[in-house]
Image (tube, rainbow over all chains, first blue to last red):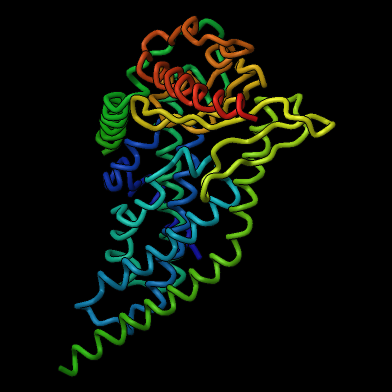
Length: 197
Length: 171
């Protein structure tokens, strides 16, 4: 049990996909404009990670190594398509806001990376907690980045204006802002890590 | 040869299972997706022309050209149409309510993906509020720093409004 909890926790801090592994930065840069988008993207990616990790851990024994990647991609794409359909049915506004980045979860390197590096070598329960931890770590990273960008770039959080008369720095809502925020956060987390060591 | 058959059959099997699963989910969500789109459309029709009681789509082939807006007695009172124009980073779609005499009653931006904080402000009431009960759009002012997005909305509505006025005049 303790090992499972450890599998879950490592994705959040020690091996955080965004700030430590630096995987899946493309969607992170693109969708972290508003907090709503960040949360939505995080949940969608978590679902895909969980599903693909579990299925791949289940079928890993019966897949020849040479066709591993195509098999994994089919599994991942299936979960992504399910996510997209469900999102269209129950939250069309979020689906529109995330646009192309929902189908692009297929090529998010966190998902394939975990499938190949972890789920194909570990048990189903370990893979489940690994997927969950990585998903939650990704979601938290997205929440942090998009909260900073939405608050400083548009003066709102979840679309609600917080401080009257606050003049937002528009650049943070635009692509350069994404690079700046992620770069500074990466540096900040590295500094914390070095100080601890 | 033996390997090739094994690889092929494994991959085929996985694809068949995946396709079956997706077909199932599609059946479950399809009607919900359609009804969501329908409900959204209905709500925005009401929003831009609240006085109308019912709306009737006017189609050419399969595409909806515009909606006829009818009052409580079933008489024509105006039209609602969609206008879309290329903005800065997306196509901006607006729903426009028009009265019988050709004045624009109200507009609503139904889809856009413009720069947040700049172009995305075309969806805010400060901008869309300018299009209440006006005949001439030239007085509408663009948002500072978002001229492209603002012009896209104004021009697309202006062009489409001309077409719809012709239809309304022939009714």
